[in-house]
Image (cartoon, rainbow, N blue to C red; front, side, top):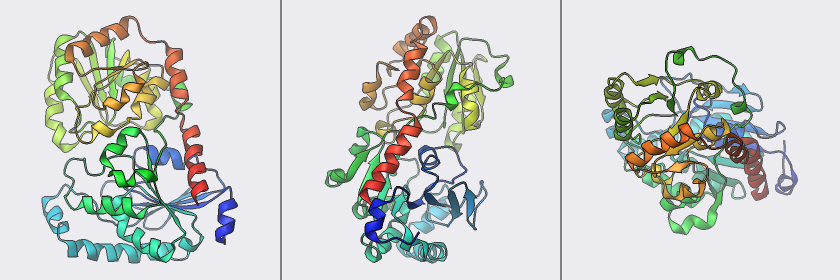
Length: 386
């Protein structure tokens, strides 16, 4: 489209550039769920970081009305050597110059016809500053889906990029009120809340038998998601030793958590671990669960997080119990039991096995958080501010 500023405000469709911190074909996170449901008449250029494990799209790869392209960018790294090298500001500035040149190869012409620039990756702040100066009327949005400074191993210099991003963008979208806790108050006037959600229709379909769980006897207590430093291993160990149930944990494991997981695996042969599964297979696995859990410790990351699995468990009609890692989530206490007391947690598992919450109530609750609704809300919001 060749768009004048007045025409931009009246269009029902848009051209969008999204600067991401993860690959398009990685796990189905908030951004993929939202973007994939944008109107087909719109167009999204999804800029993804380089990866060693997942294929890189150095030339744009089309996914329906989305094109994903890989552009190397600064990122937090596990290597101590690389982390030390990136700690020098002149190294990061040099890297930013390379990134800017690479970005211009694909977007020099496209940026003129772009309605909205969205970032979920704070390391793009220097590029954002350049385009804000050059295109002052371009709407720039930060989709702040996690506290970027709270992940394990986050370098100190990332705070500079985070604060600069908050300063430069026109609007900040967060999934829940609790996310305001790590955003300085001077930026609160920019904030809009658009919650996390669930692909409700997907979770109504069970399309395959799960052979891996065939020999696991019920009742089954299940967790599906990443297993990392925020996972409450002490609670799981206590539950295994003090309840008669089988525990199934499913998801990718961080390097720092593998040893602790191995220790759990050796307890009484009632803990079963499965590696990450495809998103579309989650409902079939959940069909085998008696109760689902969200066992997180409370730390800088989790105290301001709204996990999608809360809505996914509910969409599958499964009762769930979670720890009190984010006190703001007590608003959902009619639909999930919240306690960090180990005895109460164990007792609630027993209660939900013997007298589970209404499946209909759980599904009705989850239906209000359908990604179809939230994607439209997100799209309408960014259209209004362009």
